[in-house]
Image (cartoon, rainbow, N blue to C red; front, side, top):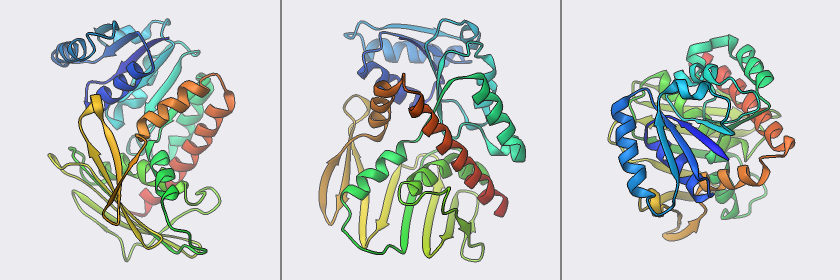
Length: 302
């Protein structure tokens, strides 16, 4: 499988590492910046020198060629649609970082554009690692017959502010929530009175049936990523250790540290196991449309 990864940030490193772990031997890194391409070249050739991987570093014009089996887009949210336009081969498999496109760029016409790209490409997969993280939370939660409340706290580093924070982090939140209740069947309603928003922080109180969900999302440069979940009278804290090459995930529950699977590794495991199954891509498409619909509805209420 010949792959191209569009992007030159930390998330690019994460995707490349998962490709290497899955024995991909030919990877092209695409970036507009020559300086960033050179930095990536030095990093990857050093990091994976023993893996015998052929790396190529180039600009976006390379993606116009038809020979890539897999193209991964992990650039800024408001540029995803621009890079999709460069891809001419409808048979290529696309993996796109969430959100698939920015609602701030498309507004109410977002669905028309989604229809357009899904009609062009047979295999599109949007990356939702928080869906896998949610399954780990459910695995270690206590049994209760009724659930009335869920809290999800996510703090990350980053330069996004105001509604761009919402665009960037809400797909994580919604894909996580969807594992607890199907958002297509039980959509969310924003409680405007209890919700707060400012430059770097959102507190969103949402209701669905008799279920209340409190979400706290924030971005600030230099801030270390932190995820806390309160569910079924328990508090779950995600703890990460080591850097990319030996990355470990844990859940801290009642002072106990429990090792869990890396959600991004789970995503790629599923992809490589199911990359030839139409149903796998169809289910991801349905999820993407549902999450975009919920995101758009909530965004209009802010």
